[in-house]
Each structure stands twice: as structure tokens, then as C-alpha cells.
Image 1: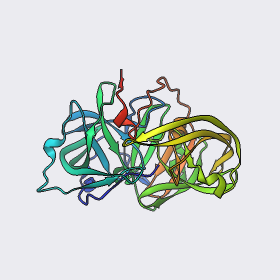
Image 2: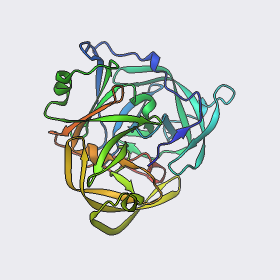
Image 3: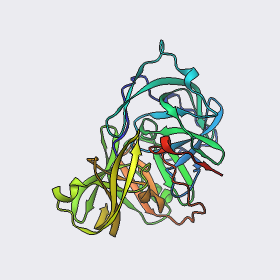
Length: 331
């Protein structure tokens, strides 16, 4: 699915004001500093991280397919009082289907997680209310690439861990990468396409590009690719699924392709969603679910291997795109 785009010129995070905690002292080679956090939720949930916004505990999804940091009001958090149209611009965001939605740029005094602090952060407030929660915390939005693209981010979904590395631009140390990954790994270049990250892949030998979007429950491709690139299917399920975003939906079927290759990693008989109303492919949560993945947007590389972790929580299918219609409380 396409990312959300914002026309709010002031809606960016003040990254120049990052304050790392004293214990983030990994100051050797390519790594300047690092900090780890426990992911909330379970295997079927978009990566969810505990945060504090103006010292109030909350949770935010994470995905590279979103431009800014988007938030919505919840029962316990009201951002409306932070809207000041005389100081901050009111504009529109474009959703998955190009639908315009009114939004406000807002400033929060503090945005923090795990001792990592960003003072005077600027977020984008969307209309509507989020009714999702996880482990007692309101899920109020999603962190996009305005934040994530400044770091190398290690996702280990099975072990429920995420680590942010502040890394030097243009620096690569294979021994250091091997230590971080903790085993034999694959690697591939990533490219920035309109601020979104994409990787080259081959579907049954046909070279394609996929955006990185763990907010999708499953890797997907446009139905048009089948005819345009003569992609054969091993199998296609008859059952259709309708996914909604801002009250608009698209239909998809799960299909099996002969292979999906990323770098030198080849998955045979790979299941993938084939959907209408979309024009690009995306690597979804299923790519991350059983792997350790290091996305280094600073140096345009992605590293991944199978995870040794053992997940205890199957999750509750929490995703940002479906949050408008969801009413879920995870205990």
C-alpha cells in the first residue's frame, strides 16, 4: 500500500535535539550510540513500541511506509488542545487511495522512550479517534520514516526486541554487523524512493521492487503484475479478503508463487497477497515475523536472518491502517 503523505511543512521531528541516555555508550567503529526497547503485542501485530508523549504513557506502531509521526485522539489522550491554527499549519494528508484528510501539525513538549528524549517534537494529528490498546496502553498512532530513516533499526519480532543504532554515514564494518546479527545473514541494498524504502526482489525470476511496510499483515503485490510481467502462480485461493482504509477497501486473494528471492535468500512456494486497486508491492509483517532484520536507512542496506527467538504471544492483528474500524483491548 502507498504511504500517507503530508503537506504540512512544519510536521517533522526535531531530530537535532536528540538526547541519548548515559547508558547508551556504544561508541566504537560505525556505531555512535544504541538503545533497545521491548516490543509490545505479539507476532500478528505491527511492531508496537511503548512511548511517553508529554509524560503520558502510550504506544505507537512503527513502519517505513509512513512519512511523519501520525497520532489520533484516544479516550485517555486528547491532542486537540495542542492545535493552534495561528501558529501551526492546517493542511491535508493523502491516504492509501489518495483520499485527502484534514490534519494539524502539533507540538508536544516531550516525546520519549526508554530514556531517549526529543523535546518540542512536532507530530501530525489526524481526525478521528483510536480505540485500540495494548497491555493497558492506548495505541495512538504510528512512527514513520521521518524518525526511522535516521537510524539503523534492528527488529527481532520473535524475541520482542527493537534496537536503534545511531550510525556513521558511509561507514560499514562487517565484523560489527555480524556481531549485531548474531549468525549467518543475508544482505541487500535498499533505495529511497520518494522517502520510502524499497528493496529489489525476484518473483519467480522476475525482478521487481517492494516497499518495506511491516504495517501490512502480509507481503502483497498488484494483481496487474501477473499479466504485465507474466508471473506464474502455483496456486491461488478462491477466498477473497476486503481490507479497509478510511472506509475504502480493496480486494485481495492469497496466492502461492514459485519463489521470492531477496539478495541470495530464496523462499520456494512463497505465499503472497495479490490485490486490486494497488500499483506497487510491499514486504509486509510476514517477512519480519520469523526473522532478525536490520534496516540501515543511513547506509542504504538491509540485513536479515532467521530468528532464534521463541514467540509466546500470537498477537491480536493490531495494525494502524485498520485502527479506525477496530475496537480491541489486549490484556
